[in-house]
Length: 331
Image (tube, rainbow, N blue to C red; front, top):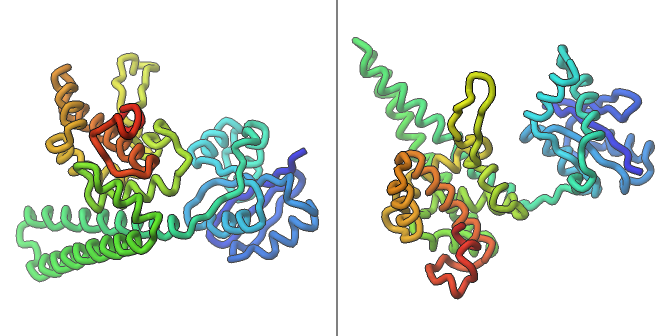
């Protein structure tokens, strides 16, 4: 019989509900107080499952603790927890209420989905490079747009514009520096470098898109084709309810937005120089698909080609007889 506890994670504290009472522990490295309590209550962690909501860096200590103590966890998607809170009629939102709400997931989760977190330090470090790169891009784009807007303002301070442009150029340099460091790190790791080298063999994939895809594929090694496209927000969605009875299918745009961003220009290049994607894109246009729709479909196809190459651990090739059925690489 399994035992469950639910944890609502915040920056400073962990709000815990064990099915009987509410408890609070400091959210600090090692979680010694939580460990002491769990050992006193459960003796062994073999039948323990921790339910918590994935909250970015604040949940790292809890994840690391569960990994080192070999405790199974079930991570709840924030959207699912928000929807469940509405179903339960929770009109107030406190840490204790959220912890109790998360505990309700024990009745609907499959035990097979609760797993011991496996932490790969190389993947963690690579993902930090990618998230930093994403932050700098967003800031630089926002700053560039602001500078452009100021050009339409009469008598905009010239000195201020000069400083803003200097800051934009500095962020461009930082963007390149982060990318260079990320690539050096990848090349210093034999496993990462092998996967990176294979991804770069695909016509259209460059170092930015290669590093971004490598980060996703390494983090979600067991993900299948449909899960990978969902993780990158390229999975189709459709709404046909109420007034939207004729709603068009769109991509979800969930998951890693930075990967979609850095794949745009590589996809444009691939439909010109990659024979598979060029034929695929041309075929969609011949079937009267909009160019935007065809481009997104080509981007999804390129992701699946890259995923196939990554899993095959071999460089890209057009000779499918050597690598098996075509579906393995480009379906």
